[in-house]
Structures are given as structure tokens and as C-alpha cells.
Amino acid sequence: MKETGERDFSWICDRCKKKLEPRKVKVSYLSGNFEVELMQCPRCKAVFIGEELAEGKMLEVEKGLEDK
Amino acid sequence: MKENRIITRTESLCPVCLRKTEAFIVTDGTDCYLQKTCPEHGDFSAVIWRGGIPMEKWMRHREGAHLEKTVTKVQKGCPYDCGLCEAHRQHTCTALIEVTQRCNLHCRFCFADSSASKNTDLSLGQIKTMYKAILSVSGTCNIQLSGGEPTVRDDLARIVKMGKDLGFPFIQVNTNGIRLAQDEEFVWALKHAGLDSVFLQFDGTKDDIYRKLRGRELLVLKEKAIGNCEKYHIGVVLVPTLVPGVNVDNVGAIVRFALDHIRAVRGVHFQPVSYFGRMPHAPADGDRVTLPEVMDELERQTGGKVKAADFKPAACENALCSFHGNFICRSDGNLVPTAPKTSCCCKNTAEEGAKKAVEFVAGNWSSRQPIRQETEPLSDWDEIINQIRSDSFSISAMAFQDAWNVDLDRIRDCCIHVTTPQGKLIPFCMYNLTDTAGRPLYRDRE
Image 1 (cartoon, helix red, strand yellow):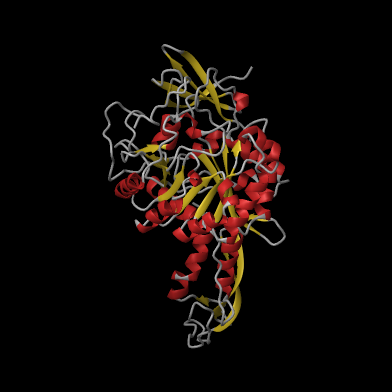
Image 2 (image 1 turned 90 degrees about the vertical axis):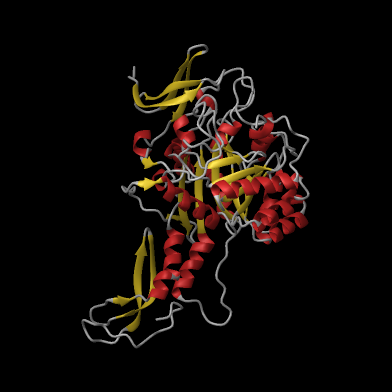
């Protein structure tokens, strides 16, 4: 999945065998709560976070919220 | 009568002869004092901690750093071998270069006032040598160009560019802002040279404060300087020197002023007054304001918008030297702290602390740089990053030490170092410290 929010419909949940769908998901880190669109399994609600996102913008958000 | 209890044992200096003495941090149950005895000049006591947060709860244990590269050898013992020496326990987070001793103000409180070399500026060649000395010992740490008043130098932009060309990623100018207010072309040149941040002397939101501390009204000039920095995208940190009876009652208003100028202002960095220069009498405890008092006042004067519990000690310098809090300013004007409420129980190393502090200062004291996407809408993650970049705001303070309250344990943990023309790096408080006759331990002696 592309970090820019581009949707990738090719992922399937390994446990439920359902296609992942783009859904608004609540994420929290330190005291910050945000709603972001992530690919999610419609049944078990597991979300997929690709490497590019985890090491890119998601990491930038983490660093932005962290203290010295 | 309250009973005194020793919290910790450390070392200090006699304020009269600067001889090293044994010292004790003593508490009467609420306030803490540094107490010491010089065999020749007698007993001394100075308040170092007063307010709602107990010192023992605030203190942190941390393993000291091992410096790969040092400049001086341990010969006479701390604090007489500064440079940095092999016994120093922290890397350089910020290296200062005093590019001039000239100034366009005559302030009541000034670190550099005792300097004898007021009429000779460092040459560009000397400054380059100093930059290289910093690179060799401390790598590409953060740089602060200080003085005197650095903006009295017409070639300040060249000095900034020289540092950038040598690879320093973050350069800040410590200034009273007068020239930045009056000379827009000068501000443009500084930005063009790569200046990241302005450390703006800003003692309050009322002109009677400036009259008392700086000898003239300055508020209009401060606002103009902030406006020019906003125009040319230079981050601003407001730096109030806090003096009891003058502006401690103004800390809440200072934070409100900063938030009203949040497009340019990245944070407020309070500096409780410390006493350098000729002082025939020891400053009274009432002449001092300590870190927990500043935290308490922030909570009281902001009506709880900022809470004392939102602050924590830095991981870089000694815990007793500073506090800081990082916030997101919401659209309704409320501040949301981004650090966890509970304190971290993990053991931090000085190395990790220094690295984080260097990154934090560079990221949070530079100009705001939101993501702009012309063609397609921003993703959710871009929106969050933009919120952090546009609305993050820091409140911090640093307590400098003088001959009366100096704790050598804190000096060994110091990460803010003044560069000498000979390429030595002297912990900031040691560089500025003077005895009661105004004689410095290091300034002008190096």
C-alpha cells in the first residue's frame, strides 16, 4: 500500500480470507489521537501497515510527537 | 522549627576565592539549598529548588557519556580543566560562538558584561577555526551565534553561511532583536545564508519590564522583529530572563503572547536570573526564582491551560538544570501535552539524551514547514504531520548556575558549551562564572 493514502486492494486477510478495505481507523500515540485511512479486514478489523508507511510518514508523526 | 535533611553530597566553589569546596544539597522538607563552607571565607547557602514539585521526585539517574574526543587532560580537577576534559560526562548539544562583545543595549543582567575585549571582534578566520574545532570534538552539533549582540556585525550572514558550508545543520542567533526589527534586508540576508532560528531576548509583554531590565522600551521592536522573522521563515524562540519582582508575574502573559504569534514563535525558553559580575553581597534567596516555581507560576497564570505536571526534565543535561514540555496548540487555543503523563522508568544514557536533544532543538526551534501539495489532496498522514508542524509549541526553562549555587555534578553533565578562540569548549556556566569581585574563572582567560 502506498503511504500517500493510495488504496491497494490486492491484500487479503490471512486469517479471515477477506479482502482488505480502506477504512477510517483510530490511532493513538502518546497523548495524540488521530483518525486515518488504513486498509482493514472487514471481519477481524486487523489493519495492514506497509513498510513504506511505517518507516515514512508514520515514523515522522511519532518523532514529531516525541520529546527530547 | 523544620529539621534539615541532606539529600545529596556534591562539590561547589567558594564565591570569593573560587576554591573547590564540599557541598550539600539540604532540604527543610519543602525547599532545597546548596550549602558549603570555605575554610577561609566561611559558610554559604543558596536556594536551588522551591515549589510544588519535590526535588527528589524530579531527579533522574543517568549513565554519563564517554567522550571519544577531548581537548584537555585532567590535571587540577573539575572545574579547572574545562575544554572539554576526559572527566566530562556529556557531549555538546549546542556550541556557542560569541562573535562579538559589542552590544547596542546596556542591560542590568548580562552574561558577557564582564568581558574586557569589548572592542575587538573575532575575525572570520578565527571563527572558521572555532567552527572546525567544534566539528572535530563534537561533530555537527547545533550552533548558537551569540555575543555581545551578534547582529551588530554586518557580516553575520557570512558567519552563518560559513557554518552551513561546514555542514552544521542548525544555526541559531541569540539576539535582542533590535536590528532584526529595524533592518529587514539584514533579516533576509540571514535567512538567505541559512539561518534556522532566532533566540529572541523577550522579557515580557509590558514595557516597564524592558525599562527595568534593559534600560529602554523594546516591546514594539520585539513585535517587529518577530514579524520580520515570520516573513522570511525563521523560527523564533522567546527567551525571557526571569527576575523576581520584575517579570515572574508575567510568565502566563508571555505564553499567551507566544501563542498569539504561533506562526513564527516555536516556543518559550525561560531563564531564571543568575548572578555574574561584581557582587559585593551574596544574592538573597528572594532574588532567585527556581525551576519548580516557574512551573507552578505557569500553571497558575495560564489558569491551568499548562500544568506543572506537563513538564519533565531533559534527557540531555542534568535533571536539575532544566524542564521542558511539548504541546500541540488546538484551534480552540488549548494546549495538549504530547509527552506521556507518567514518567519513564527506563534508564536513559547521556548519549541517547544528547542525540534526542540535538534533533528536538533542530526540529522544534526552526521555522514551521508544512507540507503543501498542489495537485492532489493531502493524505490523512500528511494532515497529521502538518498539524504537528504548524501547531507544535514548546515551553522550557534552563537554570544557569553562578558562584553561589554552582553544583559541579551538574557542570560535568553540561551539554551547552562556549567555544574559545583557542578551540576549547567550556561548559556555559563555567565560562560565565565570576567570583564576588567579578573576576571570571574562564572568560577572557582563555
